[in-house]
Image (cartoon, rainbow, N blue to C red):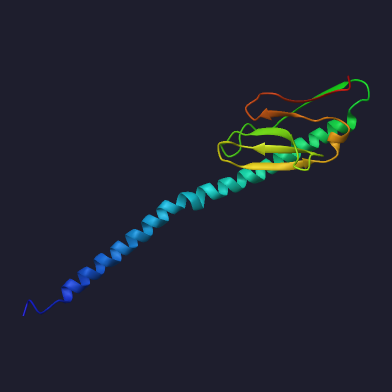
Length: 146
């Protein structure tokens, strides 16, 4: 009679299978949580901040261009954050793919984010070039008509 009663075995087997399935789902959730809850929002914040920094540098370049003297020189310092979400980055000016304009590029090698913003019209009258790193203590825009 004891051998024919298998109710206890089915309940234990059911609990073991349920526990193993729950453990599998929990393990998958834990391994993906780093990407879902930390990496993706951090990347979004970095990209948005890089666009803001690029717009700020773009504005400073255009403002310097507008007040640049015909004969003489001008120099202005500006501030950019040392890091964004714990990552250091570089700001540079490169020729755009069309070859006519320049672009302000903000990029970080550490996290692979690369943002470009077009610097319209300035390069046609004043050559623009240069780069800086967020680790530099001083960031300067210089213009000299000589």
